[in-house]
Amino acid sequence: MDQIKKYIDEAREFTAQNPAELEEFRIKFLSKKGILNDLFARFKEVPNEQKKEFGQVVNELKNIVNEKVATLKESFENIGEIHSKLDLTRPGEIHELGARHPINIVKNRIIDIFSRIGFTLSDGPEIEDDWHNFTALNLPEHHPARDMQDTFFIEKGPDVVLRTHTSSVQIRYMEENKPPMRILSPGRVYRNEAISSRSHMMFHQIEGLYIDKDVSFADLRQTLSYFTEALFGKSKIRLRPSYFPFTEPSAEVDVYWGLETETDYRMTKGTGWLEIMGCGMVDPNVLKNVNIDPEEYTGFAFGMGIERIALLLYQIGDIRMYTENDIRFLEQFKSELF
Ligand code: DAH
Image 1 (cartoon, rainbow, N blue to C red):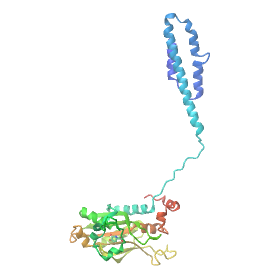
Image 2: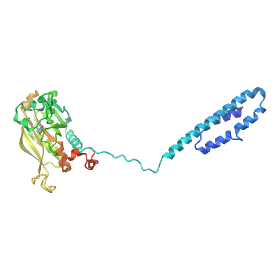
Image 3: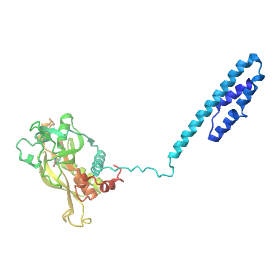
Image 4: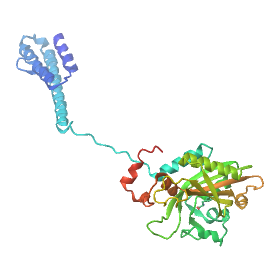
């Protein structure tokens, strides 16, 4: 009996690493000259009063061995099936890494550059009301400068527009916060311009705003020079007098690109200078509209189109490339980290 119980333990604990080991186990217990046949043969030698118990234990052993052989056999068959379908010589699947869109890369680089000097992000809605897009920015109704930006009106009424510039975020931020403030607002803007394959109804801008005590035009100039150096590696800039309703004085910013890269005189038209953005000192009327005292605070603002900056930075030949989704164009930006 002790020996049979040892067999039972052995059978219970048995596992096979491969079909050969399983076969060995099967032969040991179940073959003609195997353990079970031997035990059954010795049944007649067992004293009558022990026959019942003996029979039960031997049957238990038989069941355990049979079950073990069946389950191990099945699992080896499954593995065999998987292996027969598996071609280990096949090359692996290549997972192509995508690339960021150049508009996003440039946006993120600009954010990074200004965040180093304390500018934080702020955003506003793309569907905007007249007050934030125009009136508060010193563009009252019927002001001729409204025509500078062909506006999409939302059906709801003349008061609701698709924002024509990110300058609207300046107003929203100044209404909600107290100076000092330093914000950067990237986002989409919309203009109903003559529709040709070269003009776009939606594009991207980045707006900057800095309001504090004693902010001067010199601060503006130095900030922009820092920016062009960080982005283009060119710190030589010039500020050309210009006009925006929300700034006074206003200027157009040119960066000196030089003539070395000028192959066909199309980039700078032979001047070496490239226009990159508009800027100025925030008009006192704008500050009054958001309840900031212009006697106490001054500030500067600037706005630039991201498409244009990316065009210059990457020497992209045609603005249509941004939206054509041509993989040969897009994958050139794979190495850019931003
Ligand atoms: N909002 C102007 C535009 O869309 C760009 C701009 C110019 C923004 C001067 C400014 C600024 O903040 O000071 O053309």
